[in-house]
Amino acid sequence: MTDDTQPSTDVAAPEYDWQGYGFDTRQVHAGEYDDLNAGARVSPIAMTAGYRFDSFDDARNRFSGDADGLIYSRQRNPSGAVAEKRIASLEGGSEAIVVSSGQAAITAALLALAENGERIVSTASIYSGTRVLFGRSFARFGVSVDYVWNTADDDEWDRIIQPNTKAIFTETIPNPKNDIVDIEQVARVAARHGIPLVVDNTIASPYVIRPIEYGAAVVVHSSTKFLSGHGAGLSGAIVDGGTFDWAASERRYPLLTEPQGSAAKSLLERYSRTGYARLAREAVVNDIGPALSPFNSFLLHQGIETLSLRMERHLDSSVTIARWLEQHPKVESVDFAGLESNPAHELAQRLYGGRTGSVFAVTVRGGAAGAQAFLDGLRVISRMTNIGDVRSMALHPATTTHISFSEELRERLGIGHGLVRLSIGIEDVNDLIADLDQALARVS
Ligand SMILES: Cc1ncc(COP(=O)(O)O)c(C=O)c1O
Image 1 (cartoon, helix red, strand yellow):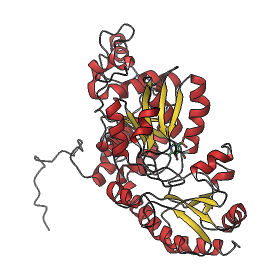
Image 2 (cartoon, rainbow, N blue to C red):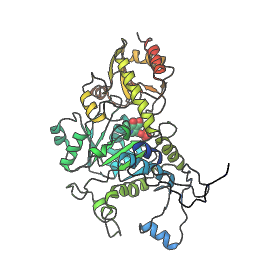
Image 3 (cartoon, helix red, strand yellow):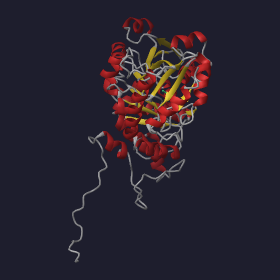
Image 4 (tube, rainbow, N blue to C red):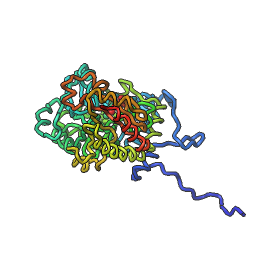
């Protein structure tokens, strides 16, 4: 055979701008960068704390913001940037910032908005660690958090929101109750008051819902969970929606809208749609220092590559398991909005396509003793805290994550003694059901 090829003269350049491509394509490619030395196809880990400046002037210009270019990895790192661009692309935001954990993301996102003497309004059913963060550390910083219990009740929101309320916080799919939130309605309340809405989208992930499309100003993630999927390392993300009109709000966000220090212009004037991201990155994350290590950034963007595939399995298996559990004689109730019997079923259909994540609660018969027998019987499903990775996990909130809560608060949140939180992984669903079945057989 003869080689009848000609020297290549017309070679297509690889794609680098992934805007306009489908979700599955962007989760693999958005933000990737080439290794210019070896041509490695996977974006390499930029394991460095700092960056060489080209000259005296270059250093000054990078610090003043007049020149692009990295300064120090507490602010930006190339491996972090891959994850940041990928998450911003999937959530539909203007810019993202990755940090060392979900707690760091929530803290930085909200402290960019509220300070000593100001308030935040949050929905009452949120991750227990966030409630502890608000009640302990935020209280010590002088930032108060007020809770709304009936999120559908506009009057309750209006009563609780005060002139110094600077942010509204909610989650799309709270755990363990799977009591999904109508973020469209909460966004309407926030818009009416000119307050930015910050949404924790950890459990839904942008594959299920993208809160910015419904009016959220900012999205946060514990990317330790579904975004990573492997459970191998902690990380968090803050996404600037790029759409909130900071200047128009009567509440005043001077760090964004007024020039600070020697700067001639405000962050908003300089950066427009990414002004909030600049504020969170440079005035909060850089000050406090919860930078994500380049290695964990790498783990995070590797994990995101398979998000949609994993989510499909998580979601399908959860519906199958929730339906199976609901029929089981040893089960008192299942809190899963995707079930037809759940009061939020209509909302689940309308906003979440009937697929309300894979973290939900099952209450077994026999109270705490029933929960103990059930948990101690599990062999495939791990007894552990964490959610949202490929392996299935179970936990008894009343004696673990919610142990510091008063009995009264636990009751109000619906965290009973027989309640067990499940995070359904991607194992064979029949093996999971068999494991649940043999563990439930121990419940008397
Ligand atoms: C909804 C939600 N937000 C935030 C966090 C905190 O994330 P991290 O553990 O990464 O700090 C968690 C952790 O479980 C969570 O479930």
